[in-house]
Image 1 (tube, rainbow, N blue to C red):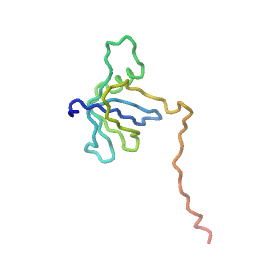
Image 2: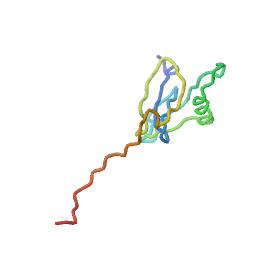
Image 3: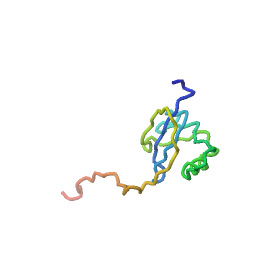
Image 4: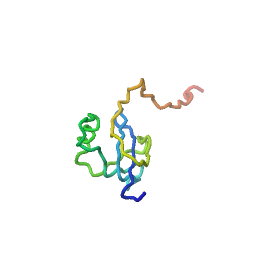
Amino acid sequence: MSSATRLYRVSFHNQNQVYEVYARQVSHGGMPGFVEIEKLVFGERSTVVVDPTEERLKTEFENVERFYVPLHAVIRIDEVSKQGAARIVGGSEGGAKVMPFPMYTSPDTTRR
């Protein structure tokens, strides 16, 4: 597959939702700790059925040439041969809950 025809599906967390977008270029970019995503690809407007989440993503990224996602927010990056629909999945769907990261608490050092 030549680099001009490569297509990537990128899934990442954004404000308690999971975004799934398709892009032609994905790299570590020039900012450490971030993934650079460029050349977003959306479905054709000629179809009769319009997906509201894909339309929302088109509007959100309308004038964006490239964007950066923090590395810890990326769920998965796949190189795919066929484009699907870009989508947003709510973070609370399927009963998922936000789980705090476990914190280690040291024993009380004031008592001796």
